Image (cartoon, rainbow over all chains, first blue to last red; front, side, top):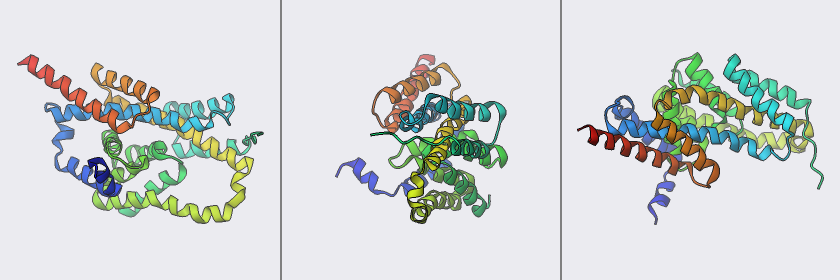
Amino acid sequence: MHMRERFNEIPGTARQLFFNQSLVRFPQILISTDIGEAQALHGAIAAAVAVMVITGITIIRPHWQSATWPKLLLFVCGSFLLSAFYSVPPIRVLLAAACVGYFWPVKAIKV
Amino acid sequence: MNSLVLYLLLLKATLTTFSGLASLPVLREDLVINRHALTDEQLNVAIVVTRSTPGPVGLYVESVGYFAGGIPGAIAGWAAMVTPALLIIPLIYYLGKRAQHPRAKGILQAVVLSSAGLLWAATIPIAKGAITDPMTFAIFLCSVLILATRKIESFWVIFAAAILQLAVVSFRMVLAL
């Protein structure tokens, strides 16, 4: 069996615990700025930020067809601005979005 | 941190969002900003750990739980991750066709679109700690381009970024000697 397939057989929860414990047990990987491991982690973290940016696009993508441009811009940019510049808690932003969404129903796509 | 409180906080994040990393802004607000149970760097490392291993993206909640409360915290994270999945069964039974109502769809769409905006907003402070020099900025840009244009698992991008950074630093160290 391929090594990656074997790795996939281990429950994700156990894998997470193992990796987290490894990081806690060898904190120099996180703290030290001199050794190579720390630098490797910095590179990985920069790539993880890219993953977050792309995840945002992945979340929006299924709605490109059903949502109109004003709707897309209002909810995405509005929530971004409220959170980033006005420090509105995310739950309040989501609640406000849900309220607006109630009065802005999705139109059925005619086949 | 109390495991029950941690579970409830994590559950709040997983219940109010609809996909993997979309819960990140809510988690950051509760655990990093309000309760100081976690740092931005730990949150970022939790994502790196999750994306460096196979499995669902939402599994990062467990890593977050671990960093906030050790093994009991990880168990709380796991429980918070599976609770919405279990709740969906009675929810589908009772809501049934109502979920297809245009207004229900409108609410769902609004929340999902907003969670993307919130995710980008939460990325800014995390990026400030992660992108600190031209090298990490280049890695970030290249990773965005590769992930946007190629169908490649994020694991490989993160792995390649780590190796690249390590190689560049090693090269600099050799030059300095």
